[in-house]
Image (cartoon, rainbow, N blue to C red; front, side, top):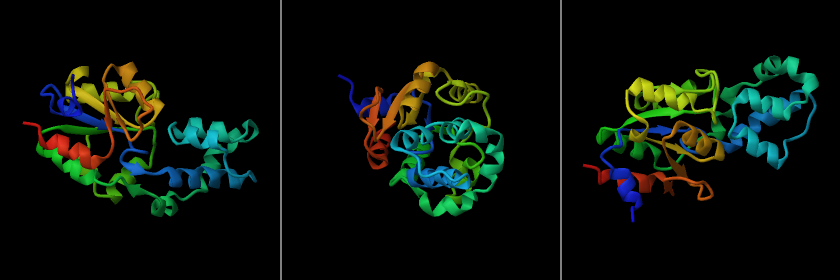
Length: 216
């Protein structure tokens, strides 16, 4: 029976692709503040639980149309521009142990990339936390035609790296991430979400670091 360690030390593994929200960042509260601020602009109250779950895993354009009534759709760009994302940075927190795991993965020769449904905020986040050097490429909802769960972002990373589908693992925390991995035909490692169907459950980045240290 294969163990979690077996999955991580597999010599075929050449790279790790990480989602952002819920994986690199604990960003749930920041996302709630962002979308509720948009609703306040047009006089609406906070989102309900179903809407909160949706916006936390989907691209911003899809999310805005989910929580903003159709009669305001022509104003979406103007509404969005009223929100200063810099004001939300205090609500963001790096996942504990992330930086250690990234350094360990790099020391073991693994490439790293990002595949996220964020758009123009991803670069500023990586710069703010001094993580830019760890990831290439960075595929967002702004760099693809179709965001997750479409596999386009993962396919682009495979092409840039010149590797096959069985040589990477995608680390995500939502059903959208799981669906993207399945569609792309790559291994899916679920982060802190045991409800997802995956090849590996990662309880935290400290444990992932321990497993990565065992790689040859």
